[in-house]
Length: 282
Image (tube, rainbow, N blue to C red; front, top):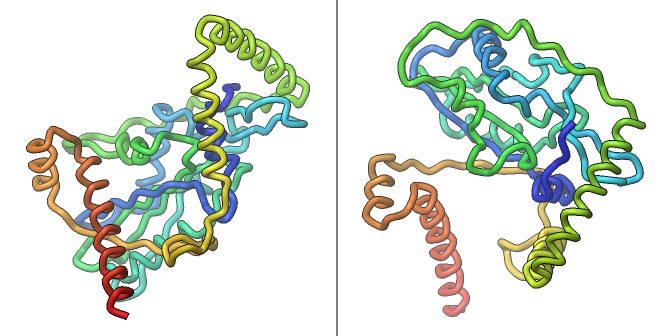
């Protein structure tokens, strides 16, 4: 058993109509693998990603943070899905499929991830869609499963992981005892930190409280982009050359992620600027 980190617990706790799962779509050229080939490749890589075979175990009476425990009934077939796009298999059909998948919440009784094999894309292409909860991994590691699946050079697949056996599910009494003991240790460490640096602790507590309130506060309909969200999602895409992105980040001493965020921020600014201009003309 492993106690969930504070930030991950926050991502899990604030989930309501706003789904807190992430997604990544990769499109490949050539014929798609069959479902059995992909299942074998994923099964062989799971030992490097222990979290993908763990589920969330909530502590009775909220006596502690949720725990990560081995999923005793783990079934790869539940998490690995297969879908085909209708003709003509273009960007419109891909956007609709991804939007439908991302509109559904993840089952909290199972490990919080899915992977979809997508065939039927036009121009002899196929895709993989990875969907996982934000409490599982940090945002920059969204493609962990994709990263371990993909190799730079062709090579023989790793042998299947036939030796893995799930640990027995912990009893309620063991979960409570573990949480109480963990909480006691955490409070002890916090007391020592508070005694040594009370100002830093106060600032951290204030920042955490402010973030919790911001995430839990419902959106107010002050503008068209700031309204309560439904469970339905839309997904779109924009194309850019990775070489161009790298050239920009090198010139500005940043990262590729910095460039992408700047593009998104610039697009929102342009949208709001145009709407403001229309309002002034009226």
